[in-house]
Amino acid sequence: MTDRMSIGIDLGGTTIKMAIVDRNGNIVDKWGIPTDTSNNGRNISQNIADSIKEKVENRGWKQNDIDGIGIGAPGFINMENGFIYHAVNVGWENYPLKDDLESKTGLKVVVENDANIAALGEMWKGAGKQASDLICITLGTGIGGGIISNGTILHGANGMAGEIGHITSIVEDGAPCNCGKTGCLETIASATGISRIATEGLEENPASMLHKKLNEKGNVSAEDVFTCAAEGDEWANKVIEIITHHLGLAIANMANVINPSRIVIGGGVSRAGDQLMDPLKKVFGQFALPRVQEGSDFAIASLGNDAGVIGSARLLFLKRND
Ligand code: ZN
Image 1: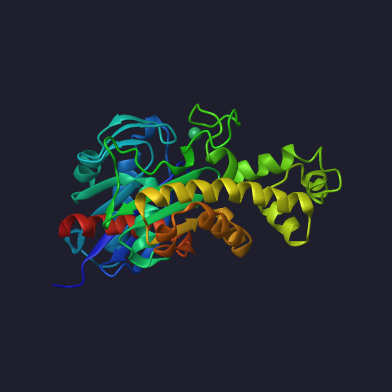
Image 2: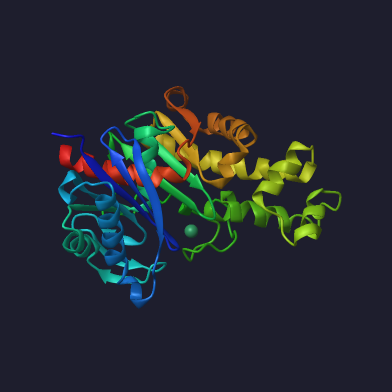
């Protein structure tokens, strides 16, 4: 048999990232198409099917050279039958994604929550280094999380496991969160949260360099906070102390339950590197049980935007090998 391939898809609200991935997790080809959210997202499956057909034909392959499609989708998903109850960014409401995509492509389809595919990708080919117990946290506009336990994605009773960003009451009476609660981890340690905390404290810190950033471009980004902190700005350093305290405490509590061998931090905020990781590890060490700390180490996600498509492709190989 020739080397089998699968298609990994990372479906976002604006772009559908797609890749052909071999059995060793190497990307053979990757591309993207825009997400057509018109008509309640009902054109998406056909667009994906057309795009795959074109790619496969251009390479002189046949459809049955492909093992199938793994797709990471947003929203609330029934993992057993790939049914999407609700995906607000895409427009799907009670939509049988797996069945529809299978009938349009003629390929086997495995659907997974988009937050979990990055964890799976990092575990397979990235910073997760094939750890079978892993926590992956993505610090972006929001906070995404995926947990792999005993080599399997943790789904929970109805697919909600790993909602790390909504560990709540991190701050009593904290800022409102998109989930409807207040003071969730996401309101503090996401790029949005860091920007909010830095901006809110500016009045009390008139000497901060961050004022200049605010005047120059009308906002203070998480990146500005790390840049100014590196230049010795007191308030910017304080912001990092605040966010790493809450993040480190939340991760330590999770680690005390999951006992991961690896904790992978990804997303835009992770580009701060040691500036984020050094204080984070320190706080983690303060709150994790000694044996838990000994058994785990931290790493920055290494696959960037490819984590999703690689993880999705893995999904298919995993299921086949079950
Ligand atoms: Zn929340």
